[in-house]
Length: 81
Image (tube, rainbow, N blue to C red; front, side, top):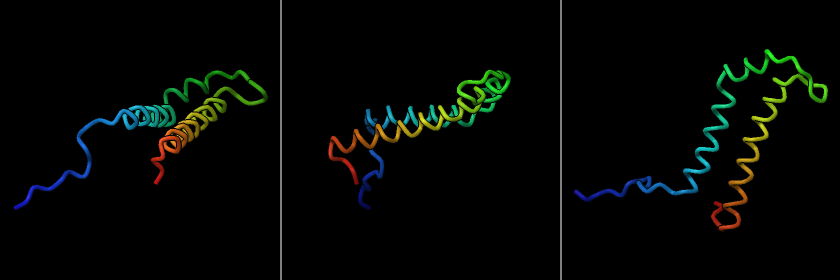
């Protein structure tokens, strides 16, 4: 029987760690109800929208900027598939 190569490298690539943590942070911010519920108690209006709506916009913008940063990082290093 021959030894099989592992599909995933056991070494932690710094790029994967950093961007993985950023994506996890975006998911946690988006999917944690207590954070959103805490902002719904604040009825302040900023630029015509409640703070809770701005929170969700911020979460979306954070996720999009993380994707853009990963794309730019990989395009500079010529790692795009």
